[in-house]
Image 1 (spheres, rainbow, N blue to C red):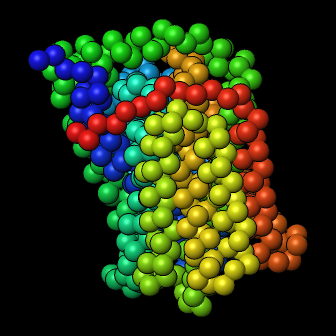
Image 2: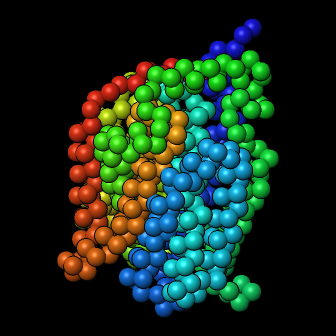
Image 3: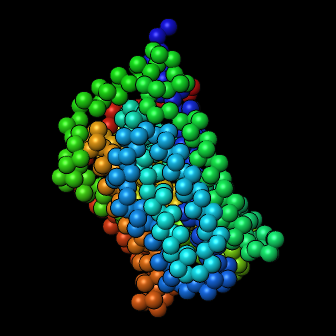
Length: 427
């Protein structure tokens, strides 16, 4: 019996998404684990709050500018070599953070880590567009995006436990956290060379008929898009609009990610350790549910813009309420915030991938991701400077909340365009 496209998509999803998810968990953990080490790392190295904010954000400088060329290089050399090599390099650099015991070493390693990771995330988004039809893409990317909350759900207790290895073999706990989590990425990079296929036409896990059906389906979709050159992406004002929205989303994400462990510990009246890290994981568990259900609902209804806007608004309101609420209510508000700013992203990425094709798509994803990286750089600095300017430790959170709410308004300014409705198989 001839295969149908739903069966092939499900088979491809089962093959690719768990592996892509594992890589994203490691990538997000390696860029965000500095938030868990913040207090003990600053105490051991004498790093000030301003220098920490700069180092947390400087990751995104090289990351921003290298996203477009990295995606074009992946298109040229293939996903297996590019993603595998990228993962090996960032794992090595993440582990080397264990030796970054001065301010200049901290800033240098964070900069290099950003450059190494520049090709990974936009490459994953581009890879998704090359393997899955448009009508199922939000749900597929929702599964991939579960890597961020999973990294912080599983990574919170892991990082907290590793921090409590303080003194083992004469090294502080943050040393072991960086070394062990970096080595996990090194192992994943080696596995990528064995596991990943470059394209549907080379897929070893599909039969010849399945490869042909999936490739033909994707080719027909691509032929309906009019933008296929790099210049088409740069000249398209909708791409610029989307890029600005994505920057705002990332300001929301990283404004909270880098400070959530210390914020939760302050609410509990304790230091960042295993117990506080377990509570820190609660908002990311909520984000897992949001990231699974909201994109799937978007696929089933074909609605993108309104769902994205309401989801981001939910995040902004959650951040704002967490600044004033009691400890229990603040944790609940942070659950809504985390669910909102993580779940909005897979819905968001259906917009540029539905607009562009070919090299324009590779460049457009890199370009949009570049603006998002600027958001990651700005986020900790906006929070730190707002706290200083207003002389209140709540000012930074409230500033992030206002920016996030404005982001939902920017989404509503996009033209309304529905996608075909997806029908999910339980296979």
